[in-house]
Image (tube, rainbow, N blue to C red; front, side, top):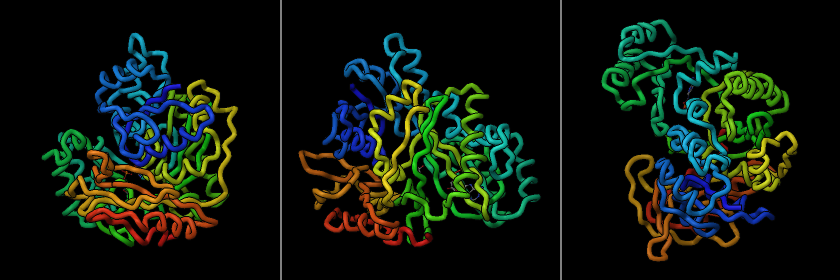
Length: 421
Ligand code: AMP
Ligand code: GLY
């Protein structure tokens, strides 16, 4: 079995790590991958959003199954491209088609989906440059803080939470009239502010059956105490202590079930991972956002907790027999800590030599590459250390221990993960 994994982050290294443990011993190809994935498979110098290049690589390497890591290739239509390809159309792709990928690619599409299927989320309205004045008037009618979301993909930067009305009006004007986020902000969703604590839910579906993975919580801000700029994610823990049985049941009944039913009613034929960003307000769950892929760094705690053969999980998804699968979860808690380049999420330098990777730790590479055989940094998020423990604190201690000997110039990681739990 030849598997192609699209992407180059810690999430994709974790997929490789789980697949490499499979008794089925699949051959792994990763496009473009990193220094960690290169140890477990073959990295291909292919840009995952270059659909024709991906198709060519699939033919060249006789790929039997494709797993899409990040959202960009899905939003660009990689699944549709393969499904319409003269010689590749029979090859299963784990990841939705372009229509369903809009759940992540367009905030307005996602809000309309939730409204249509009665899924709890913040109230909202959407505006374009033509309706800017109505948008400005709308802001005057709602309480602060104001939540402004660029409709399209904006690398995690498209959501603004603003406390002053004047500033919110300025930001809306910037987004719509001055296209602050380019095409992504041609449309803007303004939604009500939800005050609560966030958690993430991951579902793998084959279009009819599904399995719900362990829940996780990630830490998005660069600074300790959840301060400073948003990042791709500085760490994560699983399970989520405040996600008790009663709350889990509410998530299942009010959110997971109607979401999967919504896919069916809308004939989306969703095959792949659904990552539901949730917030607990009082005792009730609300959806903050949908993503159509696994989370990064949540994957680094979620997949290591799953005992099932990952190859079998993916095959069952491809063959639409997920209903027969029973998930087995390790009882221990897991935590992951992300080490980033100095300066991230703003400007940073690549090419810093990385030393001290332990032989016995669970280190997932993200922005790493080999430069003449030397391991060097090659991205903002460089690597993540995952640890296990009897509870979150023990898991964090173990994850931090994995970083003890690792060093590169400018290396930074948050030392306060779990502070809010
Ligand atoms: P999103 O890209 O939609 O997930 O938004 C990014 C982040 O903004 C979320 O992880 C939340 O922390 C925050 N956020 C988004 N929408 C809301 C909302 N309606 N109320 C409060 N916080 C929000
Ligand atoms: N960690 C958040 C994400 O993957 O979008």
